[in-house]
Image (cartoon, rainbow, N blue to C red; front, side):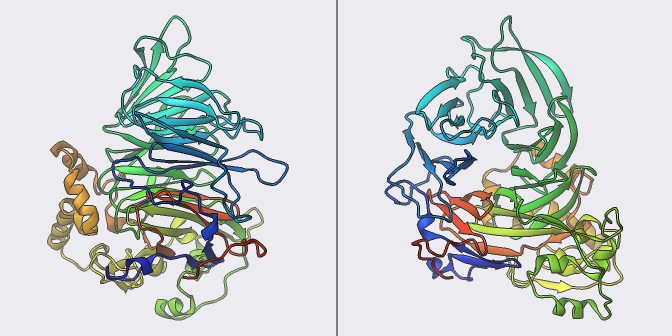
Length: 552
């Protein structure tokens, strides 16, 4: 964690951190930015975003990186942990006037060393299809802004398609485009195709093929991000109204929903196997949702402000056979002392949690660990392990170790006071903090009063978040709806689901973080100053490369 107190902010920036698999190190000379390396004055500009594609180059330099900073868009060969970045030689650079890039996405299905298809969304609503290798601009969609005039919030190629892509706007609408179709010279007319709770899908009425093919209207307010499931069959949407909505994409049918604890949802991602979805947003939490059960199974609290990006680490996520558990006797406190803090998979393999594992076909126990990360406006990177004691809670939560479920003293809450409390006879892991769960010993009246305060005074999570919530307070109707959903399956109360603590929580930038991407040999972060940082995974630093790594 960053040091407390604001006097030595520069010393708080971490350049390495340790997990159970080893030490991650910031490679200072692998940093990408604008060629002059001057911090970007980000006020009034859209978030810095980063996209990667692998073109399967025979030379071994297959990764390509695209990032936007202000009105500028850059395209480089990404050298990662192998070589220092050469910012003087961008493959392509574009500067836009009158509008700013907001998001972008490569089509991995069609990418080659000679040609890539890159979609770029803009603040004025347009979408551009370019090939930064051939330096050609193929097409501009919604050029006259007849389809939607609002900012593009997210753009993605439909998985496995050469020509279909989906675009979300701050209007709350999504549009399905085909690169082969034109957008027409008049505003499109629509016909209702399917309608459900807080969503509708329309087709475009036209005598000839034109864009958009479909218009999705989802929830109220901006649609901040969407993500396709790994098999491409489902679509998860995170909206400003605080709802996660998961659709069957082809059938346009609602599969399930979840409501944030407070405020809008800003980001969403799928686990590599498609079983779980993680969302983050203005409640400063990461929320884990089960796709099959359509319910919240855990929340994580480590950030002090809005969570801007969540992502699963496909390289560290694992399902492994393991040995039968050794016998264990003694108290939970003794068990805590035997296991070092942060030993993620070891923490999962407790005597109790192994009893609740799924078994493989030969009846050997299976160890399940999902690793995901999050970054936020608090400039912090958090890493989380989702383990089988959370995924398969066949035993009461009190008998899983509360160390996994409540905040640790090394990760203080807004008040800086957190205590771990074991309650062996209760069914709820409890902790004493402003964000802790409620004790079962409290009277019903006290509990009601605390729930009431939690509903209407959520600003206590952090003063930084509270200020923003006050500035962007929702309407009375939205508040009433939030009060209705709290305590239901859509949005369980805090004490009804496990509260995860981060394995790692480090301040790694001066400005708010906007990017987190896990690659095979590194993870990549970016902040609003326009610096894209590469963090080498343990053992992945090339020893003969001319890099000087700063030590924490």
